[in-house]
Length: 127
Image (cartoon, rainbow, N blue to C red; front, side):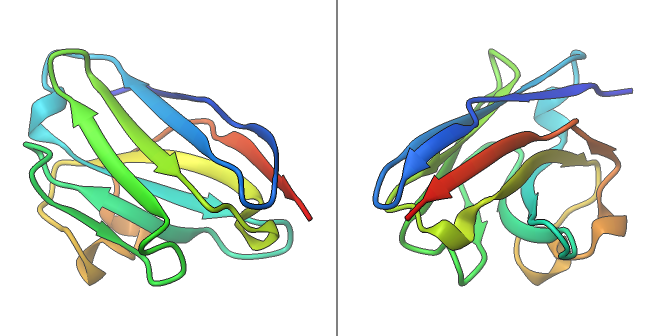
């Protein structure tokens, strides 16, 4: 069992930056591929990013590619999402997720791929 707790959300002006963090419980954190999703009001939850178990590879949705970066620290059981050049359309609740399956790109898009979810953190980007 893995528990995920996100933090770092908030209100920011367009063009600004935020860094989301996700803290995971348990001693097997390094065995999970980690991901980020987001859900805007009235919309489906959508894939944002994934990061491999070692953290050596990341994959981003086209909508955030070039603006967001990801990292993880397996010694601290944390994963981060650095969000730069934020736009109003980035406004959403952001969720951290973990899966014991292998995925990096399109295989990560399906919500059913992911075993554990955090409670989410709100990101609001004002214009």
